[in-house]
Amino acid sequence: MSYKKVERMTAFMRINHWVVAVCIVAAVITGLYIGHPYYQSFIADSAVDKYVMAWNRLVHFMAAVIFDVSSVVVAYLYFFSRFEKAYKKLVPTWTNIKEFVFIFINLLTFNRVKKFDSSHADSFNAVFFFIFHIMLLWMLLSGLQLYVHGQASGISAIGTWWPWLLHFLTDWTVAVTGGTYMDVRLWHHFSMYAIIVWIMFHVYYQIWRTVFWQEGDIGIVVGGTKFVKE
Image (cartoon, rainbow, N blue to C red; front, side, top):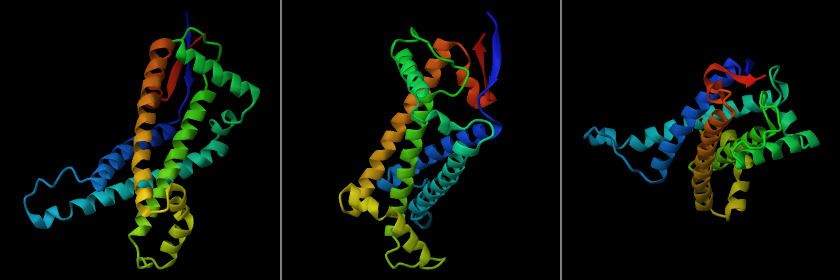
């Protein structure tokens, strides 16, 4: 049996993937600390210790900013990428729906029913990643609401327009989560666990594909290619 090499991710896509992965780890670690401080500076000097929270907030905020930039880039590539336009797999056509169902059944039956072409990006993964980006968008908006809540004066280093814009974009999160700032905080916190569960399944699924399909899917995020049986 022979194999052919298929390109699945460009160098930029792979870099973006690992940048997002690092940012998620940083955001989770610092976010948990912000919600409930669980470690302190190893330096005994209290003048340094008191800035531990500030540094955690800074790292958390910068990780979120990188998330934002990545999300904008991904949204652009969904429609205008010259390599692969992901939105085509999200359109609920009969072909996409059938492929989604076949892949789902294949997953449940441990590769007993494989009636689809695994050499390209499939509709199951497209929907799965779309859910991920929706969760990231929610984390962005709810996180900005928590951020602007601390600017009670309505002013910032770059003017009053910035807090006003954040309130305009994110105040609705207070209403939909229960009506209080603490409700937003709790939903932001619990959404983090939903993202962690998503990541766990994502890693499991890539290992599953590698074991059952034997096409080297786990290497896509490293080398950008996989091997498909001819």
